[in-house]
Length: 182
Image (cartoon, rainbow, N blue to C red; front, side, top):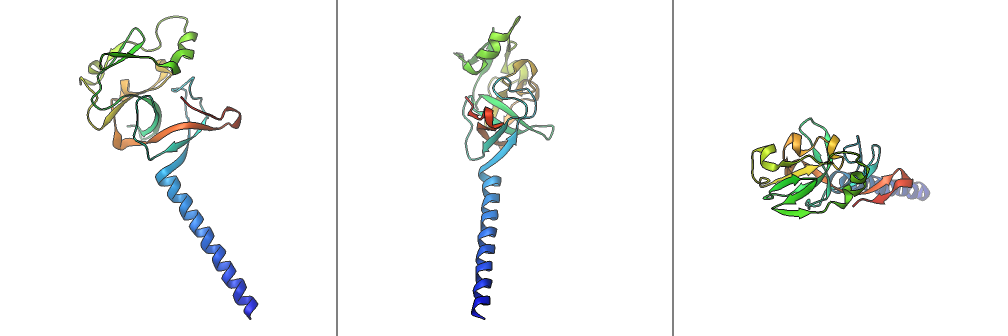
């Protein structure tokens, strides 16, 4: 009889441990980290179609971070943060200007070196695109690294921070391409 009770208790302890592990994994995935699949070429050459990444849901976006957000079409998009609330954005002769200051974008160098004609990013100002001088409070301005073929803030406008899923820096699959993204 004692053996049967001991076995029952052991089974109950294993069941509790398993339930706690599953609940903890669910909480972590829902609130902290989650995997995401890159779908499309809008972030080439930085990210490739089919790359799998880890999303950190607890961070506040910083300039040049790669973020995931819920787009107006009901899909999740992955883009790079260019403008933060209050920023004035302009592109002129393939150079990014934020609040009048030129910024280097080294993550675009590889792509720019492959161009045979024209610029990677067409000239624009935030005002031309959105009608606003500055990125509104509580919103961000995002661009895909594949500037010629990216549906980003130039087409869908600024992104409310409430639509942000999180930030990503780590490609974990395919394993041969695992790396930290800059």
